[in-house]
Image: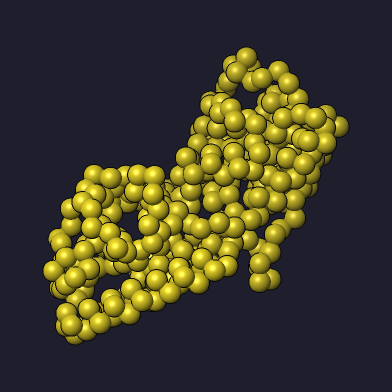
Length: 315
């Protein structure tokens, strides 16, 4: 898969001089709805005997149009997005820098410079995709701007449980700890990354030593709760359980942490870059009356997590 970074105005020599089927979107999460777009683009490319290209952006357009008071938290890092693009059969990915200059293009200018300029035989996008002002730069209006120079394929909403699958819905599920729902909508297990750092070693004193994870800036961490997870250290994956919360049993006004207890594991792993798959929500966070009550609950969480992975391995 070839990655080409584009900043408007761009040098036309950057663009391979060959026809493509072009899929467009920001694709945060590359969820089941996005996958319908990419699958159709791949199908059309195969039928036409050309490459499949993706036009996407280096950051969310919201950052240009609105005040973002905190760091924007994505469902997929760029690395993760590339992995899914590759899995979906993309040949070329155009990563366009979304700037004020780009945002000022009219729908016709965007069509001419990017869709025609990228040599699209066909353009594929979700029914609600826009490429300029949302009232005019619609998929419904795109055939007018295309003027017969390329085909337009608008993909209808993909629904689960009677509601559209979209990045906003998935972000809300993750923020609420509903990773099972998020995973169903994504079509794969939600993943984050991080670095193992020193914590306060509370878990070690009660028989549950944890890896304290410094999460990656810009990634969306699931809401407060306890989860069955898998963690990748080096090349190996391990079953584990994770706690996202404030350790309120040990005092008030504590920082939010991500701590992972890895089953049957005793190695020191400080400084390791890790990946975490958020498989299953176990329970919400509870402030216990004492350490013994916490230990009893951790034993139950341990058992529930192991049973979950046993059940998963039988499917």
